[in-house]
Image 1: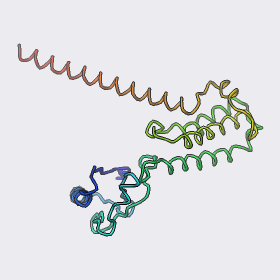
Image 2 (image 1 turned 90 degrees about the horizontal axis):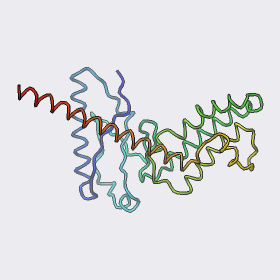
Image 3 (image 1 turned 60 degrees about the vertical axis):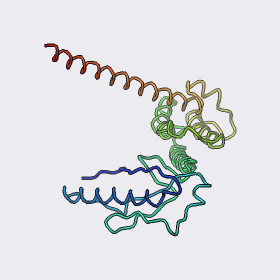
Image 4 (image 1 turned 180 degrees about the horizontal axis):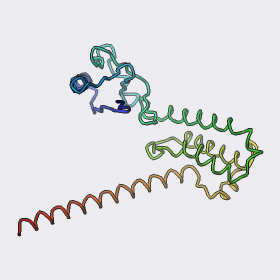
Length: 226
């Protein structure tokens, strides 16, 4: 049985960081005991720990006296970035590692498909762009709303790669006209649309939950009256 991408989160002030790590170790010990009870094996070698905070806060951490994170006698190292459900979280939530990973994957896809762009028809290339380019850029993009303009411009250039692939454009050709032909939004508005969609879904789920609670209360009241 495999259970990947399981996390333990703890909020802490700088003064209470040591006790917070101790609390995490207590949680890990309970997980170990539960896993052993049910015949499950946890691999601590694939586990990571990270302390996320501002540069000023992290500079004041006394790393030498900070307790280690341990699982069944194995020390879990503190890392500068971790990967959670395909999303790279760095120690300052600057999203630099995430943007670099998006760039690497998008350019890799572009290089793989370049030799086909003069052969394939445009409808096929549009389909490939949706499945191989935009799927990478769209994934969890609502999670990192605090991107700098520099990173947003990088994401815009990555989207432009897909447009260049579809229409066979050169490096310095303008893409705005062709983006309009595809009816694609610029990367900033595209992300805003995804945030709005997510907000709408959460609102609908909240309304559904309240409706279900109301129906349950109505049934209980009906039983009491009877």
